[in-house]
Image (tube, rainbow, N blue to C red; front, side):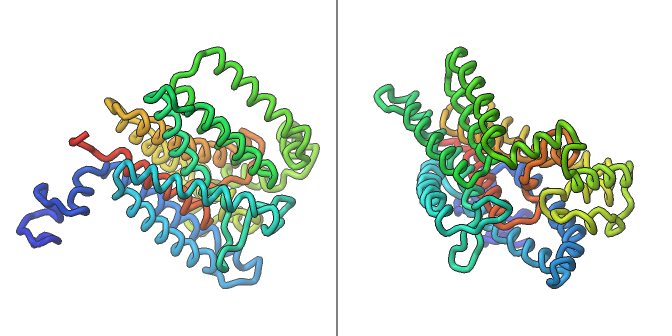
Length: 379
């Protein structure tokens, strides 16, 4: 078969191919890339199954969400591929520009954003609704990793102080919306990175106390957080309709599921295509399929971390770990909420739930991971 770049070979790219795509193909982690594509495929399948009844309830075309999600997945795949071609220094530059842009959007969101269920998290940019906090997480992980790494390499550079200021700004802007879930994710990214960068155990203890204090403050100050926690601790204290339907869906699905399109939970849960799509998977495809989904998430995280073995670039270690923490924590929160293991939180399941900002934001993060974990024999 003729090569895409002119050489006669049995594979698409020869190892002697020095083009950008040729080098990318032989340096990128193809197992990690395949797992991400598989997860995108699972998401497309579940959105096709879960979203038509939701679309019918709001009187739009039955495939309204399906069509939009396929567009989002196409854009996400393009972003991920393009970013994965970048060298390390351009990853830092792109993340820095992205971080500054998102901070600007977060500042103006309370003034021009849309109030949805008591929170102002969405803004309209050129006719497109965006949730800036979804793009904050990958950019924050990379830029903070850069600050920590520079602080270790150059004692005169105040990397720790800069990172603390960045975290404080992000928490302030997120809590104004308010968005406690995203605040937890961003704080978790920063905490893991500063621990890996070398933090005395006493400061780790202090950070833990600070996190507890933040959680208690959110419970006391934010009514919707207090309501969710109270309903989790005492289901009889409030409306748990979605959680109850979700648990019934898992019990109805059993081991093998009722079959594609045969579930009923999507007819009764408003967020079946987004926050509760894991319940649709459990009912229609069963326990074994859910275990497969969890296995794919686990493989992506473990594969990404395994690529850091022997890595001597502290920035790469911190950035990749931070993004994988975001990816894994978001998945755990979504699935645990659906299974009534933690208080419910409106957080999407990466690459699986319907959503434009969330899907593309996660893809940008995984593009960073693919770029930073590429083999770099010259370094």
